[in-house]
Amino acid sequence: MANTKSAKKAVRQIARRTAVNRQRRSQMRTFIRKVEEAISSGDSVAAKSALAVAEPILMRAAQKGIVHKNTASRKVSRLSSRVAALGKQA
Image 1 (cartoon, rainbow, N blue to C red):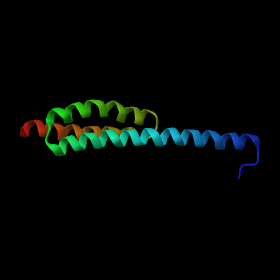
Image 2: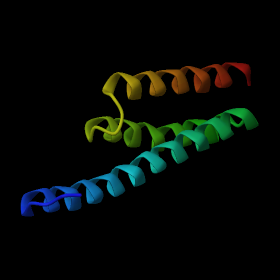
Image 3: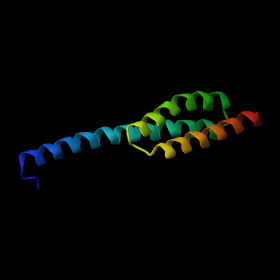
Image 4: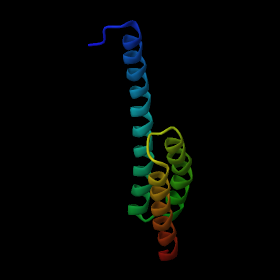
């Protein structure tokens, strides 16, 4: 348990930051899931539009420190290649 005034303030700040980070991470996962659902349904137009919405959210999460920038880039790259492959099949 925090005893000093500064330690108590740090605990409050950490709790606030954790709540924000949890919300951002959840939002990121939701938009990734929307892209994956569009890919699995085989709808290339929906997949492209979902990817266009998800990509900036992923990169913003990397910028804010929610995920590492290479992780975000890897996820965008893999989703992009799957969407592109879906377009070639149709």
